[in-house]
Each structure stands twice: as structure tokens, then as C-alpha cells.
Image 1 (cartoon, rainbow, N blue to C red):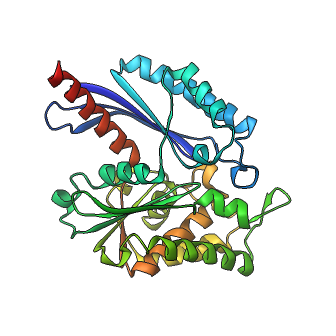
Image 2 (image 1 turned 180 degrees about the vertical axis):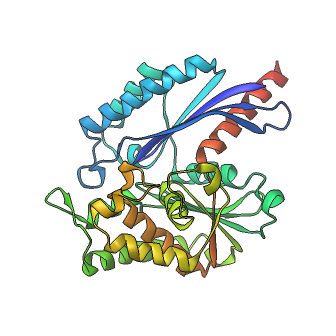
Length: 323
């Protein structure tokens, strides 16, 4: 077995996966999978910079992850940073802090690279387990961006659009530093207009209508799934590979958009860090389902983290063969 670790640092959360990769097949066995909401992208859409307190929260999580990685005796770590750190003027501050704590530089990847990792992580073994028709459309709804990837066994086309739950919330729902609760019809319409314009642009290069199976990733989607399943608390095993119909997503979106902060916070599966941004994230999912005509979304707990870990394991195997 080869022991690897992957860290995905996005706009809203930072996540760690420690896994053993089987020789030859590269199949992963999870040893530790965890997430912290750090809101690294706080204010980036407006200021173009990573806020000092956001960096502090992120570095605190990195120190926790460094201890876990050391405890497990990881052979190789890869740290990937996505939307917020791509957009920030002071990204070097972030890079140097991560290097000091974890001993590796974060790779600030492109949207296309992010899409490739997400597709690999979400779809590897999917056809054999659920017998779902191809091509897949993998949708990774993050805090700052959403990745749209169409493919069969490999990526055919991908696009990253600057539409995410944090970005849409900060752009349209925050007034004087406070999230509007609940949002007004005009605010909802403004979010939908941004999403629809971004999807129009994405369709120029990604054949969204070709997809026969919609696969949804990341916290907005998994939270919607948990609500749809009526879970009293978050249960990744129950959520993974659940299939949520369009009508249920539309019902949940309407509820979240009309709920107060307290009502959203009281939902059992809701992470405290998602309370203010879940409505915008659900709108992104709903808009994509309406655009593609998808009757359901297949929810995956395996995503970019797994894609990164697969590649790290493959690189180690290649290094061993070349010695």
C-alpha cells in the first residue's frame, strides 16, 4: 500500500484526505477525511485580496492537518488551491504560509485542472456500481466557482465559471455587511441572471445537453441531498450516490430562499459555515438542472480530493517503476 494525502483549499472550505492506494489499481481506502469551513475567499470578489483573518483561519486548519499527516506517516502530500487563491493579489502570502506549516507549496491550479480532478474523483467506478448512462455531466459547486465537466471515461470538455455559493451571496445578498434574510425577489432574480449568463458562456465550449447523467459534488449539493433524505444529522454514507429528483431540489430551494438564518441553522445536516451561503448554492444546482433538463442529480461524496489522491498515488507508482 502507498499512503498519500490530498488537501483541497477552496473559497469556503479546506479539506483533507489521507488514504492508502492499492498497488497496481490505485484504488483508495480512506484513513481520514475531514473538512473545515475557513471562508478563505471572504471579500475576494470585492477587494481582490485574501483577508488577514481568513488567512489566519486557513493556517490554523493547516496546522491541524499537518499533525494528522504526521500521525499517519504519509508518503507524499499534494496541496491544491482553487478559486479564491487564483483571484487574489496577495496569493504569495498564502503560499508562503502553507509552505512553512506543511512543507509543500500549494498548487494554484486552473479551472480546467480543477475540473479534471473533480471528474476523475467523482466518476471512477461510477458506471460499474450504479450502471448509470454516459456521458456524465459532473458539476462541482464551490464557494467561488463552479466546474462543469462532460465526459465518458475521460474528460471531453470542461469549463470553470465564476459562479459559487460564497461569490453569489457576497455579490447579491450582503447589505452593510449583513446577509439579507430572507433574500428579496429582486436579489434572487439577480443571482439567477448571473448564473444563466455564466451557463450561456459555458455552453459555448461544454455540451451540457449531451449529458445523460448529472453528478453533483461539494457542500451545497451534499447538503441539499441530506435535507432531501430527511437525515437528522450529516451522514456521508447515506448521502454518497443518493439520487435526488428535480422536484425535490426545487422544493428545497424554495424553502431555503424563504427561510430565516435561524430556520436554516436549525436544519440537522446544515454545517454552520453553510447557513448563509446554502440558498445561493442551491440556486446554482437548480439552474443547472433546469438548463440540462436533468430529472435527478446523483450525489457524490468523492470529488476533487479523490482525484488529487489518485494522481499522487499514480505518480509514486511511476517513480518506483522508473528507479
